[in-house]
Length: 363
Image 1 (cartoon, helix red, strand yellow):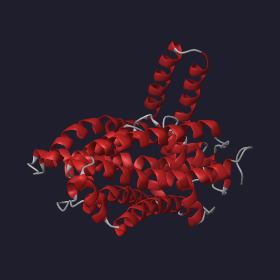
Image 2 (cartoon, rainbow, N blue to C red; image 1 turned 90 degrees about the vertical axis):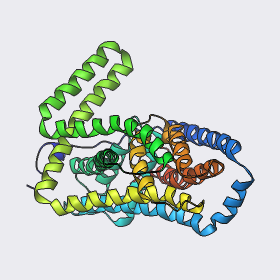
Image 3 (cartoon, one colour; image 1 turned 90 degrees about the horizontal axis):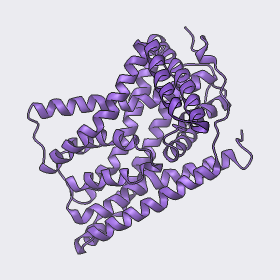
């Protein structure tokens, strides 16, 4: 069947409500808070050996950090391009896909609880001519891939550990902490996905039950917000299920390529931390750092603070401490935050500010 058929894939999308002051406030909290945490970490961990390591790090590796993050955005935008252009007649360009990816990253990072990046990217896709329901479906499919992939990494890590996988003491200690922490959000994602796809009526009943419970204990705007979220979740679950069924039946190679590109995008993101490890002298296997980041990512993503403030810094302080001497932890954190968050958030902020303007969305 063609993606345009079916009630849920033809739903109208309205412009998402994005408050400029709310975005500005979240950005300010993130920047000030992150700089404060990094400053304290650098102050506590810096020694004479730190500066010698910084001098030997090299400009080339610093440039490579930003190249890796740029490639992460390019690969994710290619996934968006493939999933949109490979499934319908309306097309978007590579530049438009890249812009939407950067802007979605900015909005999603600064307003994490509302998952604002999904309706924002979906709405912008409709402005490019993509059917409304399919636009939302593509963004949802792209968003679910990392959680499922990280779940399989968690299962593999548990299996390898049970079979006697030997790792360094730092890796084993960090894995013992982040493994159980990642299990909760990953099990929630996979469990929700299974129920949503196989038992849609049960999924709706669960959402209705949770919403009803919260509405009985909340009043006013809070209760209204719960009701709006309930309707949105049920509508998007139907859209997601129909889209995934359509892709799996009629566009399997398109779905496979989209999934592969999203996974490669996250591998490119994880390369930023690995390049930092290389720069400060780490020469052991890259398997441990990759696995740990796959397990750390869902923990950081599930946090409610703008840009995963405090949780991101705390997680990667532990990560770098597992592989590097203590005197390199603070400066490693600064390099990681700058390449992975500050640079793309600055670019995304400028794009979003230009797009929404003072009077709302521009074409």
